[in-house]
Amino acid sequence: MNVLWQSITEIAPPKPNLTDKDLPDLSGKIYLVTGATSGVGIELAKILYRKNATVYVGTRSEANYEKAVKYITTHSAEPSKGELRLLKMDLMDLRTVRAAAEKLIAEVPRLDSVWYNAGIMGHPTLETTVQGYEVHWGTNVVGHFFLNELLTALLISSAATAKEKASVRVIWVASDANLFSPADGINWDDVNFSKKGAVQMTKYGQSKAAAIILGHEFAKRMGDKEIVSLSLNPGHLITGMQENRPKWLQQLGNLFSYDAKYGAYTEIFAGFTELNLETQNGSYIVPWGRFGTPRNDIKEGYTTRGTGARLWEMLEAEVKPYLGRLEV
Image 1 (cartoon, rainbow, N blue to C red):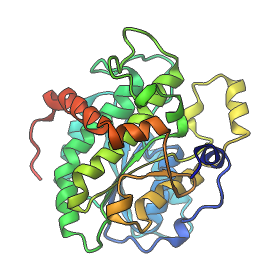
Image 2: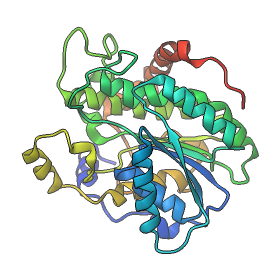
Image 3: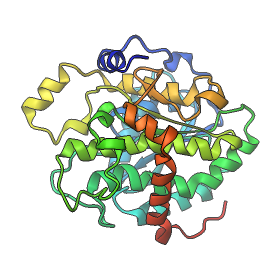
């Protein structure tokens, strides 16, 4: 697909290829959605719950979880046999991420899919996470990478016993903001921009480029385990992600944005569409459910220059002190 044309269609996408009406009954399935109390995450959780799945709602706040449960259950047209469960974590603090992973592993026999959906775009008060990372990098990248490291053994065992091939999936939610990231997607010598500052969109764009790179790299590492790993741009949406922007900019952006449910359609496409495990694993999905491509240098980086392995190894070193061992 021509990159310019794709960029245009990411702003004004064609009709969704897969919606909640196309999903089968998901009774017995177990899913995790981070950031599932607002925006795209809550719409995705609602779809999965309405299809009778057990959905772990990843969130920082029990109060937000209770509000999400009320919204999801009251906006479900028919009674559901599914279940909503709280998984409390703060991606800005790796200690809470570990505690959440331990809880999940202790409670479930398997994990059918996970959407790393949570994220921030700008923060009104914080510049760094608890562990000292630049707030976009620490929240959107390091937190999710650490959670994925903790859940990998569970995902492998789940795929080994899954009845449907390529049904166990890891979805890394990125953005077309990868267009605003540094060369290669990553400011390799200073991912925290501590030596030389950068505007918020560059920092956010780097974190979303990282999600694309990690999605592809995890597919390479897990493809022989029949685990699907994809990244995606959910679309231009009206969500709380824009709340830290000036009001005039929010209003301008809303003119070119869509209801959050359309982002959920992008996410269920990534989670459920049929694909070729050998040729399409590691792909990048664009709104509202199509195979696309990220910025050229980002893609060339992970296909020819080994940036996927470089980023993976960098992050492995970062989270190693917090990793320890989890029994599955």
